[in-house]
Length: 452
Ligand code: HEM
Image 1 (cartoon, rainbow, N blue to C red):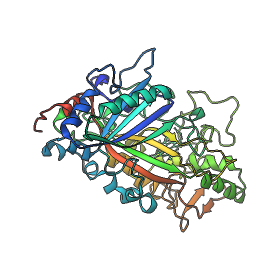
Image 2 (image 1 turned 45 degrees about the vertical axis):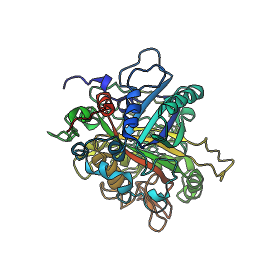
Image 3 (image 1 turned 90 degrees about the horizontal axis):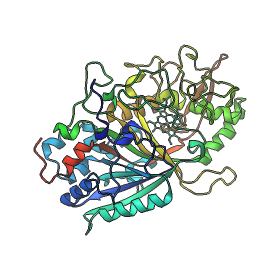
Image 4 (image 1 turned 90 degrees about the vertical axis):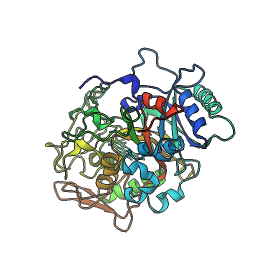
C-alpha cells in the first residue's frame, strides 16, 4: 500500500492528542456561501484563526490547540453539496443519528427528542472539536472561531460542551481510559503494543482496502470529497455515578466480592487500568505492568471461560480480540475512541450533587453501520454473539432494564448472576459526522462545487 498522505487526513483520526481540554461547538449553517467561507478560513493558513489539524507529526513542540471538524448530512446539504454527491453517502449517515436512534438503543429518556437543545441534536450541521493545552488558549481560540462564524446569523452556534482530562486519564465511574486503540497501517505506532492484527487503513479511511477481504467501502463522490475521509458517531453520554457506586455497594457483598473487584468485572480492567486477564486478583500487581504489557493480552486461550474477565464485560464485548464470536471475527468491528469526560470529578463523599457528568467525543470508523452501529446493536445490547453471555447486555453501557437485566460472572463453580439493575449511561446528544480530508474541506469551501 502506498504511504498515507498524513497532511491530508484529519489529525484526530490517526492519533490521540492527549490534551487536557476539549470544547465541542455545535453549529448550524443558515447561508451556504458564508458556511463555505468559514470552512475555507479553517484551512487557508490564517495565522490568527485556529486551523484544521492534520495527521502530520508535530515534532518536539506540541501546538497549544488542535482543531477538527465533522459535518452531518444536513450540514453537507446546507453547504450546497450537489444532490448526486449527497446521494453517494451511506444510508445510515444520510438518515442521521436521530433517525437511527431506536436501532442503537437511544429510546425513552435517551431518545433525541429528549436531548438538550444546546448539545448535538438533529439540528446540528457542524461539530467543531477544539483541543487545548490550557483554559486561556481554549478561550482565545474559541473567541477567534466565534468571530469567524460570520455576520447576521449566517452560522449559528447552537451550543457547546467542554470536556476535561481527569487525573490519571480516568473517566467517570473511576476507570483509567484510553489504553486500547487500534493500530492503523500507515499511521503512527501505538505507545502500548497489543497482540491484535494491524488494522488496514481502509478500516478507518475511505479509499483503501478495508478490513473485509477484497473489499473497500464506497467512496462518496467526487473522489476528492470522499477519499481520506472517515465517519464518526459523536456522542454525549451522561453517566449516573451515584447509581453506579450504589450498585457496587449493594451487589458486591451479595456475591462475596469486594466493590473494586466487581467494578473490574464490569469493565474488564481494574479501575487502575490493569486488565483482569493479566491480573485477576489484584489491581496493583507486583512488579507493576509496564506500558508494553498493559494492553498486550488476549482472552483466549487463557481465559476462554471468562473466569478472569467475564465474557460480558464492557471491553471484552466491545473488542473480543481473538475470541470466537458470531460472524467474521472481532477484528472487523474496531473503533477509534476520541472521547473525554465532561463535568467535574465525582466525589462519593458528596453524592447526589445534581451535577451532570459523562463522556463526550467521537467514535471514529469507516462504516457507521459495520462498526459503531454493529457494536451498539450486536455487542453492547445484543447477548448472543458468544457463548457464555446468556442474553445479557453490556453492564456498563447497555440499554439495561431492571425488569430483565442480568450480569453473569462465570466461575469454576458455576455462574454468579446479578440481576435487576438499570442503565448507568444515558445518551444526551449525538451526531453522525463525516470527517473530510483537507483536500475535501478545500472542495467544500470552493464557490462552485463540481457535479459528482
Ligand atoms: C460513558 C460511556 C463509556 C465509558 C465510561 C467507557 C469506559 C471504558 C473503559 C474504562 C475502557 C477500558 C480502557 C481501555 O481499554 O482503553 C473502555 C474500553 C473500550 N470501550 Fe468504552 N466506555 C464508554 C463508551 C463506549 C462506547 C459508546 C463504545 C463503542 C461504541 C465503547 C467501546 C470501547 C472499546 C472498543 C474499548 C476497548 C476494548 C479493547 O480494545 O480491549 N465504549 N471503555
